[in-house]
Image (cartoon, rainbow, N blue to C red; front, top):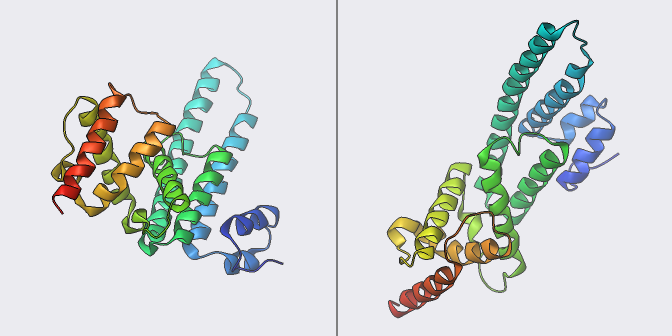
Length: 225
């Protein structure tokens, strides 16, 4: 037996090996978590079951393919919504444990090959999870600023504002608080630059300008008190 107080990854692993224990399953997971796991299982079942259908001719093969695409699209959209709802609930908590659970769900989905490569929100989330890990590793006496992000909508908006500012800096333009937006954006931006420098998936014209611009921006903030 396993306690519902243990880490999420252990509970998920237990569920995968003992999915027949319905009563135990209800005790281990919240209603939202159960719905997410059900949606994951539904998409996995579609991926496994559909290839078993044998086509008699080319026309039937095309028909089966289109049928599979439609079913996978419907279920993957359902799964995406369950995931986004769960992440919103976790982000509202604003804690390290909540972010670790988001990371766990993301890694489980990625390992299983479910939806994370299909929707752009998960590419953004992966970068923000790197920022979370960077903040945790270098916390010292500072607060962790990602804890002030309380929804996936906020998370993606902040991310794209930071990407926009990086591209401005690459062309020698200054960082502006009006564009970057809000306290959280300003505080996260230097961490974002570090993460970006270590694992770059964004096309940038001139990286030297980014470092110079970030340095100048920091001094400007300090000079203004």
